[in-house]
Length: 235
Length: 287
Image 1 (cartoon, each protein chain N blue to C red):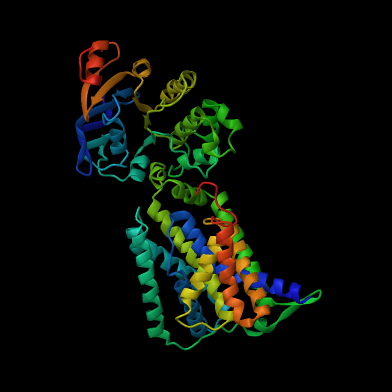
Image 2 (cartoon, rainbow over the protein chains, first blue to last red):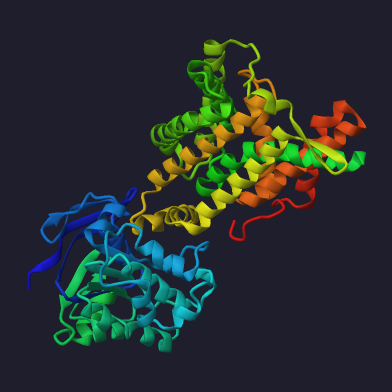
């Protein structure tokens, strides 16, 4: 499979603190990749580096184009959208406005429209005029995913979308993943829930202390190997 | 009838203060920037209108149509090349820069136009009045208030009904996440300051037609504007109109008691509102 997104030797720092140490990651067209790891493993920093929020060293190429140094708005226009950790809905925008702002930079039509998002998450339609932040956590997460999809991304980055949500809500949200894939979008999910990650991903990367410590397909990774890569100790 | 007349004159005066304040309110609402040069920028716009009227022989109302786009460009350039460089977590640098800008504009105007008082001549309309029942109102004060209402209505429409307004609000909520939507906060800020300068030009028109102006009066206009914004609640445009009217009515009532108390009464009203409602009359829920 040719890589749509190719990340080589990625490094990132917060001041003197180095958060990523030469991370390699490849995402094929149509593929879903999960990144697992404990708190502080560098997963969110990796997402922020890809989207241009955090400056990174190394190289990030999308479809052969080097996007390493692009600022965040340009990265979005190249086709990478992110569902940020903590959802980050705009408090003074309604649900529908939160969706519309996702299409702010897009030119022309594409797969996704407000109506298509309401089909994906029907519960949002009734709440469309409510302030985004007045919704339940699960519904807010749906808005955040819909907002990212509204830019018609080629790559969708989902950072901790199950964090703090009830299992039944997480199931509803992950039920949308196959439909997002069917629309031709490649996906990277960052997850602390290993079971959920193994269920939906074609391939898994495990990170620890700013490095990728294990990679493989869910079928080939043993529990022990994941445990070892996740916690740095043998089970 | 005197009381009614005083109240009406106060409300009309409030329209002028609301015009001074609307641009300040817009900029503060979007980028949390207090532009200490706002009053001087209004005065600068008044001189620009004066220049256009004398160069082209236009009526000030027509001259605004030329001055407003020039001021939009000035605001855009100011934001892009000066203010965007100092906006950040620390609120002190933009305050210092706009304070410095205020000094530069005042002295630049003094150099260019001298300290003489100037006025915009709008012709017969300046002295006309309308009889509304028992009271009589000046056409210019009435036009000022109507303009303030129209400006604030238009700004509200822009803010809540357009894609640009959506981008304004999103950037104001969370500039980092806004970038993930493809919004460039710095260009959003530049457009906002440009729009604020268009409003400042409209304020300058009424300032210059209704009273004399000279290069030194900017800071006092800033003070009224700032008080109107705070009374109304930071970031609320209709609140800013209400704030302007509170100051206008307080000044008119104070002047009835003793003409020397006019300015003081406005400031006292400001302090009173701050004591009773520290967040202003119409605070935004998420501030």
